[in-house]
Image (cartoon, rainbow, N blue to C red):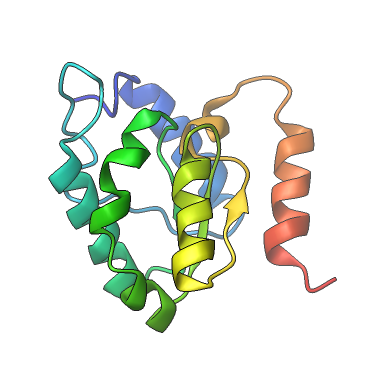
Length: 140
């Protein structure tokens, strides 16, 4: 089974790269659902997002991919839950809509940066990984 049209080899490569940074990688229950738009349904994406926010073992949420689909869930997000359980939320492209909504409606800082698929890059990823670590793993 594929994750948003990527091969299992790509998923394993990105997972291994994130784990090499000391992170534990998990996916929402609907992350492998893939409709004609290469995404899970809006309701399933929302469920996965809310479950990750509520789960105390989840410390950060990386978008799997960008895309216009982020806009579909903005009005249904539980912003109070995000305010009560702030986490690192990171992605780029149209995930910017999600990040901006969270900052505006929950007052929680988000990060416009790499998402899961970025860690699939086979070449040229060193700069991104260095800055990802600098931003999220250091105190200065």
